[in-house]
Amino acid sequence: MTTTQPKNGFRTSTKATAAQKRAPWILLAPFLALFVLTFIIPIVSALFQSFTTVDRQGLFGEDGVTGRFAGFDNYVTALNDAGFVASIGRMLLFGIVQVPVMIIACTILALLLESASARWPGFFRAIYFMPYGVPGVIATILWSFLYVPGLSPIVSLLQSVGLQPDFLGANSVLWSIANIVTWTYTGYNMLIIVAQLKSIPGEVYEAARVDGANAFQVAWRIQIPLIAPALVLTTVFSIIGTLQLFAEPQILSTVAPAIDTEYTPNYAAYTNAFAFNEYGVASAQAVIIALAAFILSFAFLALTNRPPKDERDRRKRAKRDGLEARTALQTRVASAGTVTTQAAPSLQGGSGLQNGTKGADA
Image (cartoon, rainbow, N blue to C red; front, top):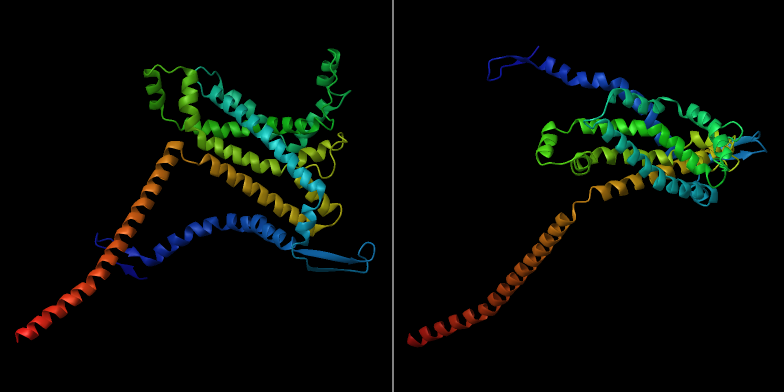
């Protein structure tokens, strides 16, 4: 075994050092293997499959099935599908309304739980988080009983006061789904914000109390600006989850005729894959959904990470001053070059004159 003798007098084994370098990769190997098998390979497979199509001979393909490269035909088919395009627009409307409502609700809950006057915060945190522990399918089935007339005590109560609610109608079923999603994920997002609130140093609150700030001022001017990273994170998660909505509309479609098989983008891809066996088109739709989620998330992050207006103005002024200084320097250099070029013939003429004078003197 080779050893090295460092300056401090201790010997270090190169074999032990190599083993220490391998140890993290050995410990990460199970996770990396599962990550590649369940995440990377499916993504690559879906991307490859989105550029292929299957030709079937016979009514059900009994005479043979052949695959071929289709180029962007599957993407053209997906984008020409009016139902799929409408589902994307529907989810954009869903996200514009539901995501802000949920983020505001979970922020208020987190601020209330972390306020100095809150009692039993641990108990209420568990209560608010409990809906997230209910599987989405079970949660949707439970809420469907509260939406169906004749079974729902809520509908019966509203009808007793003269109202005729239709939670599963064409104009209201989208917001019924939004209610289920909000009920499920508000507690989860609340815990992320609570974790960010707990990282605020106590000295900040002490300084606010010394300055005479009340509870609302502490929340608005101190806590909310400091939990901005958590708010951005939860909003990005919600944007991505909006385009991935699937379980709720699929379960509610059994009791809501307004929900068709292309009500959400994920539902449309599922229908093409497992109802029509159009795996190429379904893969293309999945890729489009992923690109839409990436573009929306990137746009939101770019918008929220913009520097303040004063900082943007300062950068613009610095850039303008830099351009003016560079232009002035280039002009000065060009002027100096012109002066040097004009002076050179004069120097040459003067030199000839001096030579001629010397010759005459000679």
